[in-house]
Image (cartoon, one colour):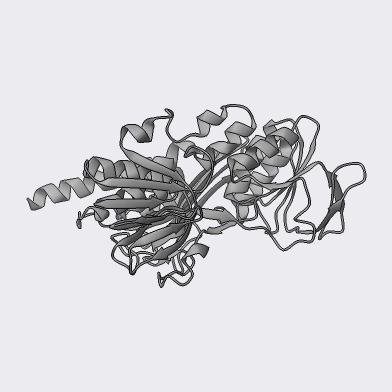
Length: 423
């Protein structure tokens, strides 16, 4: 059996390792297009502040890790897939045959259509090469503009702020992390950042970039203001990396459509991670969830199905985000924005940067948002993922959402007791 895994990020690495455990004699090839050892993009901000060296970003720490497991690593780019011949073509000219193929090609950054985005001194923080360029420019006293305050942007924000640079953030939505936080929480994060010396402009767009006079770049904002900066970091969004699939007949929507066995419409081709569009636990609909826990979950399930374990069924990924922004921990789970006709409970202390919001469908917790209250994170996820019926405890939580641990223990113990009675 020959398995090819395309993409050397977390999903690809977990997939090849799982395949090796399940099939000791299989031929396994991992194809990654970057000229680096497989690494984690989530580690790049720590590299920027010199908390880790480049080796610290590597997903596996020994140079011979894959060789010892008889996994071949090819540093090349897949340019085409021939489904009839069951082979992939590489940019270097080679073709590789497969029995089962896993696509774990991740996402790519999206550059906004702004005049001047091609000028020197503008980078995404997406590759090790990007991180090297940013680290050399984001030095104490430098003026830095971060475009985008979404989840990825806020991770980069932490590193840029700690670099000693003078940081300004521009976000076109009316709050920070708009796809993770509601208006209250997103603007509390903004207030927190500004209290720590970061300038944040929400409801603001960059309209143009030109060469500067005193600094490298001059930036025009939709507010009419202009800034001169030494460095621009663009974190304005990502998209699944699916361009190479054009003409293959593999079904794509936002990402590569997969079934509950991680298969595409071709039963011998699978997808996992940021590039895959699979079942959302909360809605039952297909969605791309570009977070590392989903990527590794996908990878393990895909590998098991590639070797024929049909019982490995994807039950849906829970929308889950946990973010540390200059020491303020925020999180959101499931349908954090609420469900039509559902109830909600809220606790707010702006002065202490404490916030908790619970969303219900009947007596089931379906979504939650927290800020500065880390003690509830595991319980909130557990209640949402198990769809535990809260009964009378829903009313208690509507009055005091901090009693979520009591509600969890009471409800899960009751479920266990009733199940015992039925035996």
